[in-house]
Structure formats: structure tokens, C-alpha cells
Image (tube, rainbow, N blue to C red):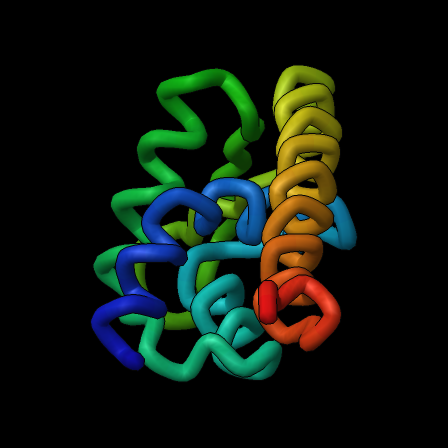
Length: 116
């Protein structure tokens, strides 16, 4: 199941991270920790950092450097208007797909749909 979960997450992780940032801005390690708190235990920091770079390049987040007590300044990521628009589209698409998948799942389990 882990391999399938990884493949499914590839297409949805941008939306998931933007949803976290819609709640409040965060830096990379904090985002990874929040993902793990939400049950995404297999997410590694490198994946999150690469994704944050893509989100920044696509113009979905604003980045602020904040002084750190330990080492160089931290990059804090905040969703911006363009990211919020993308997140809205993500949720519409997610709802559409989840509804269709649920219908297929119900159809597959419904004994009345079997031909006798």
C-alpha cells in the first residue's frame, strides 16, 4: 500500500501543502511536521522542500526570511492570492474525483448491480 499511497500523493501534495498554508504561514520543517501530525508519516523533508520551491516558482506562495536562533534565516511560506485560486480549483477537482470514485466504489459493492 505504501507505494500506491506515494503515487497518489504525488498528484495531490501541492494542494495538501497549500491547504496547510491557508491555515497559517510556516517554514519547511514545520510543514513536514504538520503533515506527519495529519497522518502523512512517510513524507520526507526533501520532498517538502522540493515542493515548496515549485510552489514559489509557480507564484503560489510568498516567501519571507525570518531570523533563526540556530543558523541561517528561515524561509517562511505563506499562500498568496494566486495560490488561493489554485487551492480553490484543487478542492473543486478533488471533490469531483472523490465523488466519482465513491460512486464507483458503491456500485462495485452494491449487490443489486450484479446481473443474475
